[in-house]
Amino acid sequence: MVLEKHPKAEALIFDLDGTLSDSLPVHIATWHKVCAHYNCTFNEKIIEEMTGMPTISFAERVIAENNLQGVDPNEIVKMKQETFWDHASLLKPHQPVVDLMLKYHGKIPMAVGTGASRRSAEVQLEKLGLTKYFDAIVTADDVTKHKPEPETFLKCAELLGIKAENCQVLEDGVLGMEAAKTAGMYLIDVRPFTYENFGQ
Image (cartoon, rainbow, N blue to C red; front, side, top):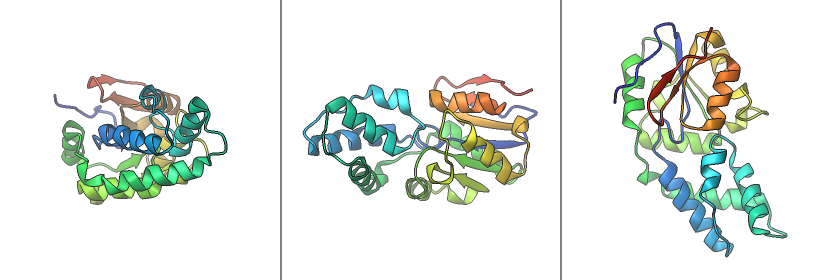
């Protein structure tokens, strides 16, 4: 299915995991491997509910659900990220989204707005050969209020020099879609490849 830009959108902002990068299978496998190390289980519903949030939030949820007393969430984050980076070669692009990106590269400004860490975003974009296409990258390390708060996308708009209401977000996560709505931006939900307009 072909995705298309809203005719009034002057900039495109792309989520990364599950949007540009078909990374969820790798993330899920990585979380299962980490949880096996801690002799606990990973509830895959966490991915659906929390996509867009930083890894530390996932680690805290895993600790709470499995009653991992005395476990440092930062240690879980470290293991999760390093394991994910080690398996980055398994990542594949989400082609309909990448096709839209390629179509408008050089024509309008484009940014990545992700809940991933700076390092994770750079690893994924590099492995997928996409780094050069973006004018700005905003990660979990660059904001204080993560999705569903709109700060990530608003910062993208600011860096691109485009008003928020003239930006269009591509997202697969419920929290990211909330953030796009709150920011007043146009939105493409890439899961069913439906188009919605939340701009003015």
